[in-house]
Amino acid sequence: MRADGNSLGSILGRSPVRRLLRIMTGRFVNKTTKARVLYITSRGHSGSTLLSLLVSSHSQVVSAGELKMLSNPDPQRRLCSCHRQVPSECPFWGVVEQRVKDRVGCSLDQLLLVDGGDDDTFLRHNEALFLAIAEVSGSALIVDSSKSLLRLSRLLMVEAHGAAFVLHPVHLHRGPFGSMNSARKRGEALRQAAYNYTRLFFLTRERLRGVRALRVYYERLAASPREEMARVMDWLNLPLEEGQFQWRDGVRRDIHGNDMRFGSSDQIRLDQSWRQQLAWSQKLGVLIWTLPVRLRSAWLFRRLRLWIKPGVRPFL
Image (cartoon, rainbow, N blue to C red):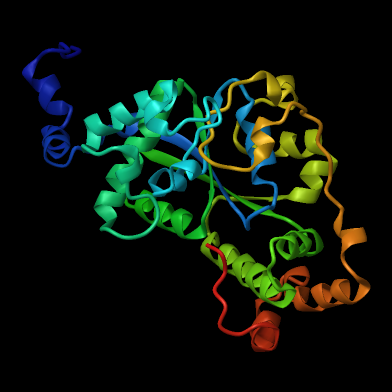
């Protein structure tokens, strides 16, 4: 005989331990309501906004932008793309913030999203944030384009110990010439940029070893968006929709990101300005300094790293 839904046996069968944990820690331990999160990790200026726009224009997906920026002290770096306001003043993010407060008792700018604090607090804060975004948006998948490898590493660590979210990491990679030219425009020395670029590539590859992750190449995405997006959506087990290529028709919820979010065109153009803007000597230097990435040889990078640029940390 099937037990009545309100019987004592049924209530006990739903695990009083879970109820007690929820009261004591504020965590939602019902793992049947996990939020799915596509996390984009990459070097800056590698096409993360383009990938985010293409994925989040799906009817079942919402892009939250660079969630790590929610705790940034500069309000101008926390503006949403839907109303160009700080989250607390945005109709969408304001509701998200209230739900987060109900769960963990703090506002969005007080969340532990990258480093610092203990792992349990980090887990509770990110669970609350992901679940709130999923509930308010009604979406089956959230795109977090924070890019930070440090944030991704910590999310993977706490997810492995049980979390109310499921991560789908995407390593977005841009070719060395375009990436180095972009760094040059921002005033970064090419040798330093090459060191950062190469080291971050191997750090990311090592962190994602054994993890179900997808590597996406910016050049392929920009040159053949339909073919590459078909591969991405198949990996996510979601159908490719025509509306994903008319992303200007939708509403963006992104926190931070580049100005491409606010443009009026949905035309995709492969940036190959490096061909004209880099001198032949610079191209030769980039070719040599990033050779370990081209050969996928961490051994070669270890041999060349002191020659390229010692003591420089990658942008995490």
